[in-house]
Image (cartoon, rainbow over all chains, first blue to last red; front, side):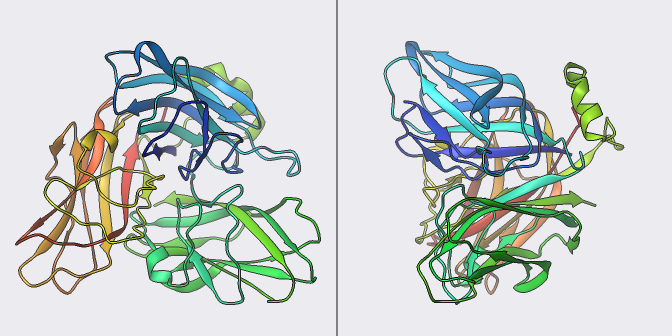
Amino acid sequence: MIHAVYTGMFGSVAFNPLYFDPFCGEYDTTKFVGHWTPALQIYEATMAVKTPPGAGEGYNLMMYSQDVQTGNTIVLSGDTDTSVRGDVTGLWADCTDPASFKSSAARSTNIGTPVFQPGMVAYVCQCNAIDPAMNFHFAGHENNGWTLSTSWRYTTFYKAGNTTTTESTAQTIWPVTGTLKYVRIRYISSCTVLPHDVNLRIRIDGADTAMAYVLPSYATTAPHLYDDTTTEVPISAGQLASIGYQRSSATGVAVFTASIAVGFISD
Amino acid sequence: MRFELYPELRRGVGVSWPPPTDFVGGVIVSAIVTITTALITPTNSYIPVGSGWTAGKPVADIAVTQFRAPREFEFTSLYFATSDTPTAGKTFTLCFNINGVDSAAIVPAITPGNYSAGASGSLSVAQDDLVCLHAGFTGGAVSYAIRTASSGYRMLPA
């Protein structure tokens, strides 16, 4: 499966430098943001901006994996072009050590004077570790800090935050029939009163599926990785997919943040 | 061919290459989560395909919504949902826009009484094409929030 993922940067964005989540579009100027993914091979990438960088200036696009650039740098420069394409041929590495893994991220830097303008990045990647026919769909964020309560809350695919108690506003219409087949959750869940679990569900049409997980909490904010490589859930075009979660207990001060990758193979 | 640069990847992961089929399916899930009501007007109706749409509403400037296709592919479906159903006599549509031109190939339409719609078809996108979504309506101005949109695609293996 070749999987094209498109991520955007909108509003006044300074390439000064800028790190952004390649799957959910969040960005940050001071640290890496992104997801823990199974290994993904990156092929072509493009970058588009509203106006040309200007004479003698330009923007670099570089893919990062675990704090290290992977593949080639793509450069958009000059006072004419507003977009550029190139072969990255990079690899977002698999997560083998949860404690030291840095999220996959892309980075843009300005060569000349910082310019505030909207832009967009697109790239093609393919699953390289589990099944080449599988693509991945993401939710959450490396440091999203989702709100937790004992009431169920919901989030949608390709969204870092903005969870809601109204599930209908978090549902994505799945456009292709196939099978959800792999779930990877990287999370931080700490609580001052233990035990304290987080229930997380992949839901279809407002109902729980077999992809139902109990994520233990801990006394520290160390990250933890949860993989489900066996559960398969069919999904049809037109069905509504969402992610639900709740705290198992209301006691204790708690912190919860998560990034989720859900594998999918189309029929 | 590019994988010849990375023979270790083929060995290391134990997967077959190339994939068994020439044409494989895929999904672009475009999460357009509108936080506030997005006013759709004839000049304020362009939407990016893909994630990261933090503004949460359509805009008039098509240039800020277009991505440049990194490789040739084919859109196969498009779904979208709104928070309100169109009033009598109005229809809310969404289509792909390629290089500034609306495509009639896959155009779901939400009609009165409904909150979502989907359509399938075939729309080829060439490498370097500029792609976005364009919302439209018939029967008079509307003020609807596009809650989410998603599209399926097929892409040739590397």
